Image: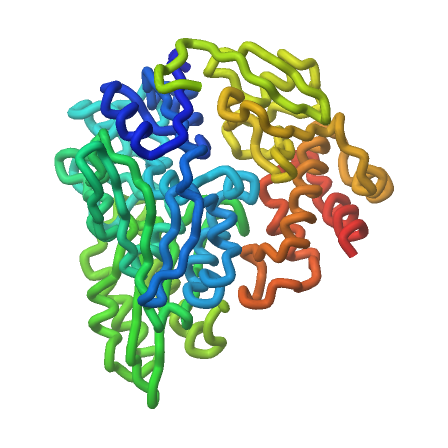
Length: 331
Length: 170
């Protein structure tokens, strides 16, 4: 690991001033991903600005029955919050299906959004990687691709975004609030992570001098009827091969409201708008669920080792909707 | 600390097992390495050093974390409990139920289980929880396995570990 300077800040103004003053500074939250990447020499900051003492650890209910989550709320605390468990059970489940209890106790909400891909070639500094070193090439393409993307990839990068939490958040139309010396702005989570295109090293819309201060989730009545399902190589403590966040309300046998998103399959948390459109107003049947899943995966492309994910995602989406229909919400 | 970044090292205080230690740490040093190398508390083990095995689990203000991914400088003035500071019925339960073979993962398993029992008592759900709105379910074997999934045991003493924790929990 490269040597670095360290500063702990106690208010947001100081934090954004400190990051603006140092071209190669990084914010340090729980450190669960950043410290690991520094040890691998993938991240090489000159300065770490420790933000864990900032007063950004509140969870507040909003007038529209939504919720405002401070960027430094720990993953475990968010998952256990009574409002999340009853109003947005798929968000609670998504968080609880990620990492381990120890890591969830350390990791922050803002850090979860900023975590980087677990593509093995990105971690291996001996392998060319367009994300790690712009223009150096992609070793994953034509390599071992079992964990890689089937949606939204490019000829420059096929890495997936590893978050579970963000999959549920994108289905809920969450908004990310960010702050710099120039003020505050709000970015819909759906636009926060970028597709790789020809610039896979630029992963988010966050500018280098901006700090995530909060995530807001609007009131989404259908979210009370939701579940998160994750398929992985072992029963717990592994990244998703495929995951599904699903919320569905059925009235008189027809789908009257629906939210769907996929994880483990794309470079960003993947909102399945086409599947939602296919399902809205349709009879709540196995056939409709299948058509929705086909719509969600219509543009999917396998890389060889991960071809199985296309059918797996399809079946997982159908199974999640079936379980919502027969057993109801995870709340 | 002021706004000017301190260079490669800093002086910090750690309260470890009730005792205050003032240390000068290189910023790169993990809490795990400080415990083992600077303070001489070698009960906490280094397994993977990347947050994947749980051997380094300690309690930070009573909450379980992976000390290998914790930069020590971040934990100035905090309370750390390591296996050397633990006196808990789980320890004898592990012996009774053969909750280990080589013992390398055991300090992490025990610190993790102490943190886990507190989380469960506080009403925290897990991925194995059937209904999220009901918080006071019994700690079934399935719940224990899920909640302890961050601690690997390569000897495969899992059945004994689950039995030991179950006995103390129920």
